[in-house]
Length: 116
Image 1 (cartoon, helix red, strand yellow):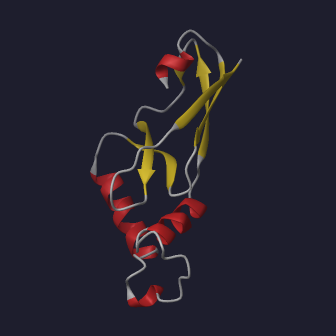
Image 2: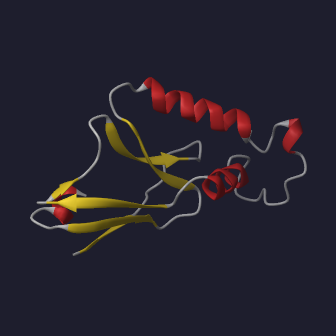
Image 3: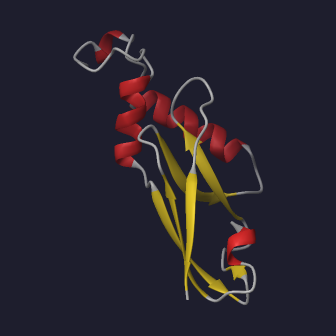
């Protein structure tokens, strides 16, 4: 993201081109924050092979797929961040995260656009 906004001013828009992950701005100092968020969402939307999720219809891609879509429906898939003098105007503790909702890593693409 820094390479795209370097030298510019305006508004950076980030957009993830996938339906089973999200983008978040979260604390970047303590990795337990993201681990706790991951655990929270795993409890909120369990895997499809959990008895409480037996109502799911979309199961062809595995027990983690539809829960991943639900999580992505609850969380942002795009972010807007002000840019000044080529720097993202994030707070001291902020970090940008691609929040993967599938059990196994996937190749993801994030589009970054700077509007000056």
